[in-house]
Amino acid sequence: MSCKIECEWLKSKRILVNPDGQVWPCCYLANSTYMRAALGYPNSYTSKETYRIENQIINLEDAAVRTGQQVLLKEYFDEKEQYNIFHHTIDEIVDSKWFAETLPKSWDEPERVLHQCKINCSKSET
Image 1 (cartoon, helix red, strand yellow):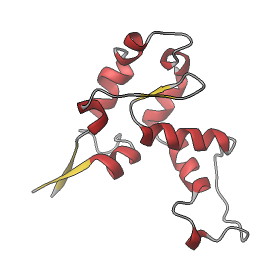
Image 2 (cartoon, helix red, strand yellow):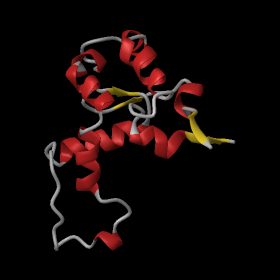
Image 3 (cartoon, one colour):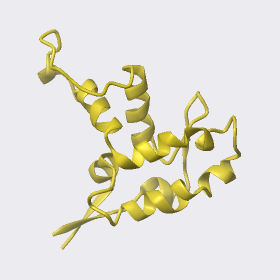
Image 4 (cartoon, one colour):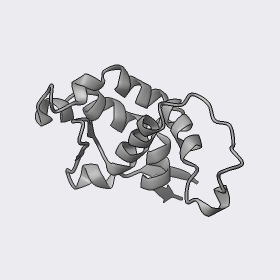
């Protein structure tokens, strides 16, 4: 059995724009990258006794580290000004190579597909 990615946001022709102007294909990517920025772009994570992980829905620091390690998101951040409405139009952004080609092609590449896509948009195939 394999999984196929079906992006509901793409199908409904929706995007998300953060207050800082960054355009994202969906809330799953916007939220995880926003939390990474809010936590200071951590590159590693050490469990802290002060956090009671069992009482949290998600371990934010660990998720922030994993988000920063994804190749596809690194490609986005290398050109992040290109995906910002304060520098480019919405049409330019959604027609850009990352939005129009790189992200959708990654859904067929298990080693490149984003964790957020796998978790939230996978449809089982038999």
